[in-house]
Image 1 (cartoon, rainbow, N blue to C red):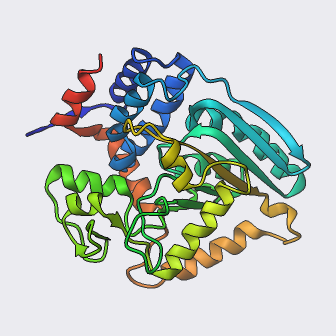
Image 2: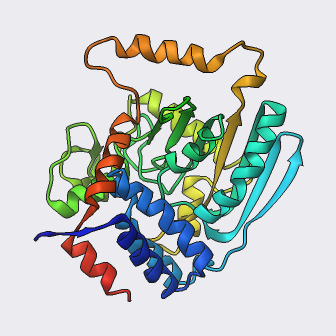
Length: 333
């Protein structure tokens, strides 16, 4: 089946139209669509329009407040919190961005917890907006159980992604965004949809046996990257976005979820740092020397470079949506 070619504007307008016709106000619909189309633009398909049916399902079930009004408050000189009002993360993140950046610029380091939100997107989007302000930043969030702990054979951790970004002058920021699982679960879902085989070591089936069949892995679970090392990072993230900020861990999110296919309620934490407040003479120039030394080695590249290259191509050629997904999206109108 052929793909449907859409310009970025057409894709964004389609997403906004679907969301507003299924329970979102315009402000939330635009924020969610901004995030989805940013992922599509950079060819991160597992967090683009692929997620739209899940957003619609959670609106139709009443799990998510499509008219949410996030509220930001200051808990301590360098600690802020955004209550998402049971809405989607993108609008809460939009509300949190400037207060967090202002606090980090002043104090040198600041943390923003986001609670009562439904996160269903890539993390690099929120990181990039902070690097554009000259800050380096980190983000962490959890999900529902889909990754086995070290030594285990059943899902317990979420894919628990993390992102880090460093600002650059007159160049795109250096940003990595990766799951603590061997792959993002959305990538496994797309492999199942398209009939692809997974690389060895990605996951196990429901009986705990290694499998390269994406359908079997979805019935079983993913594995953490790097064995116990990835599992330790997944546990760290559970603590950061659960007990630290008073939100649900992955196993708690699952037990409270209605399993409609949309994102569960959970939390996120953002940490922003102002390199100019740490007593160094020129941290940006020092970082550039590091990047230059790295790139002198054949075969190397900076994390995120491929995403930036994809962005330029999409601006010119648009995006390509599988016909089956496009038909499903059209059915929501």
